[in-house]
Amino acid sequence: MVSLAPGTHHLSLPSDDDRRQVVHEHFSTYLRDNRITGVQQVILEGRPGTAVPEYAEKMDASLIVGPSHGYDGMKRMLLGSVAEQIIRRAECPVFVLRRRDAE
Image (cartoon, rainbow, N blue to C red):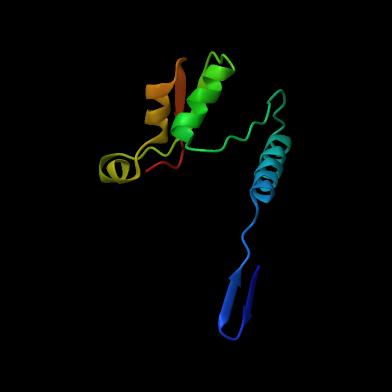
């Protein structure tokens, strides 16, 4: 919400709890709409390239499955690759799925 008064600006940002709730609701809707069951939702905070492998190790996961944008060349160099970071840090196998609409 943005409220403006002469000479002042105020920007109200959503709280961490609000953002977590939106993510939870979005994922719940996705699972329901696609009739996916048997999945546990976990919302991690931090850098995905380190948070995901750390959580997988903590849970003694036997496999990490994740998406990739499929960037290569200059885009990959500039944007980095979370999938690569996860692969390098994970103690278990990592299965990376390239998006259908990847460039």
